[in-house]
Amino acid sequence: MNAELLSAIAIFVLAVLVGFEVISKVPATLHTPLMSGANSIHGIVLVGAILIAAEADNAVSYGLAFVAVVFGAANVVGGYVVTDRMLQMFRRKPAAAKAGPKAGRGAAGPG
Amino acid sequence: MPQQWIETFVFFAWLAGAAAFVLGLHRMNSPATARGGNWLSAAGMAVAIVATLVHVATRPGGLGTTAIAIIAIGFLIGGGFGLLVARTVKMTAMPQLVSLFNAVGGGAAALIAIDDYIRVLGTAEETVSTAIFVVLGVAIGCVTFTGSLVASGKLQGLVPGKPIVVPGGRLLTIALAVLALLGTAALVLGAGGAIALGPAAKLFILGAIIAAGLGFGVTMVLPIGGADMPVVISLLNSFTGTAAAMAGFVINNPVLIIAGALVGAAGGILTKLMADAMNRSLMNIVAGGFGGGEGTVGGPGVEGAGGSVREIGPDDVAIQLAYASSVIVVPGYGLAVAQAQHAVRELAELLESRGVDVKYAIHPVAGRMPGHMNVLLAEANVPYPLLKEMDDINPEFERADVVLVVGANDVTNPAARSNPSSPIYGMPILDVDKAKSIVVIKRSMGRGYAGIDNELYTNPKTGMLFADAKDGLASLVAAVKAV
Image (spheres, rainbow over the protein chains, first blue to last red):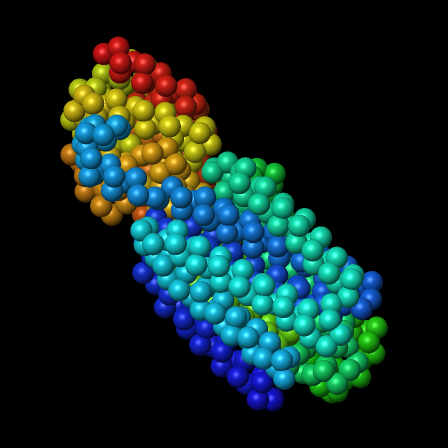
């Protein structure tokens, strides 16, 4: 094994540990957006697809790279947009309703 | 010299992207910072992609016209499709969309590994380690591609949500796994020179691994019942992350390795959290067979079908609700399907204006995914503090005058507490049956997603209002106004 591979494995292991830590305290409410957010992040395969597209020099490679770019782009763009749409719904509204019970639909007061 | 500078810049841009993913995910831990976290993560993604374009455009030889066309057209098609469906999909169809994006991500990871293997085949770069990462990337990517498509199809209703048990299906799954493992061993040994294989033979074996992976994804998910689908999608999400990391090893790219490993681990934890919420072990779920139905109806279910169900009209329900002091609404997937989240909010506001205390009890897996119901109700402007999680609301059911169950079924089934022979026994449920009076809005006596009968419906305290969630709520709103 060469040094490059060893350091890549080290990076992998550390990133796995970061992944475990970063998620452990998420409330259930955010599980769906979080899954969707993580789903967008593995859209990073688009970077790999671009790299193989640049290397491609025959019909098979062109075909594989093209499909990979389409897939990766759909994953990235769709993933982030749909996650944002989910999270948009958690915007400040609850706090506003609490702060101004007289305004609009907060009329009944909290709880 | 400038070339070196650019390479350094590209590396740091990739690193910045990876850091943004970690920080972004971390910010998604709390509702207040979640949206910013997603933006941060998206910005990191944009930086990583731009850096990659700079990287391929500036290296010696540059970028050929064909490559430019592939990248540009591919991005426009894929990105355009993603943007369109992500913006137009109904919020109820969101889980299957996430599963679809997961499928293409896994597919892309597999394609990258396949392409790289074809390129290095027969060259000095074809080492044992390359072969291992290629095969892992291909196998995991293929499993998650078809597995996510089947999961998405089940949620969309294209594939029946009930567990599909093919005779000998489990044997087939095992055979496919064995085939993939044998292929892996052959390619790894072939790369090491331990066994002599020509390029054609190696490609054939790779083809067999691809076929086995694609088949495994289908046979793994088909026998799993729809109720377990959220956990399965989360598991496949974690797989895709791992496949992306393997692809990263194959093409030796740090940002793929970091992001892939991050998602693999985070997705794994999330999967465990979801499985815990349903009190099911992952092994249990993957082994399949949730909600067989037929085998378990011997007990209370038969009586349920027998007609001890009490039907109730909207006017009676309206009187109960209007003169209650405390009402708890239990929304379920039926509410989501009927797009009745606005109707339920209207009813709740009407009751609140009469001084009734209204709260919403949200089961962790209400809807099709954990947190799904919160998203839907937030869309309908239901104030966030009124949404109560299961552990907070369960002690309050005893004091509630009326519980209004709208389109929820399995998460209210007392059999989960009392009947050890029930397939959902042990799953944490909402203690709806402890309330003074229960009203269930439901289209028919049909079973829930787990395919089992609900003894809540034959409880003497329960009145059934047979209607579509939206129509039923609308008639309640009209009736309460008339009270």
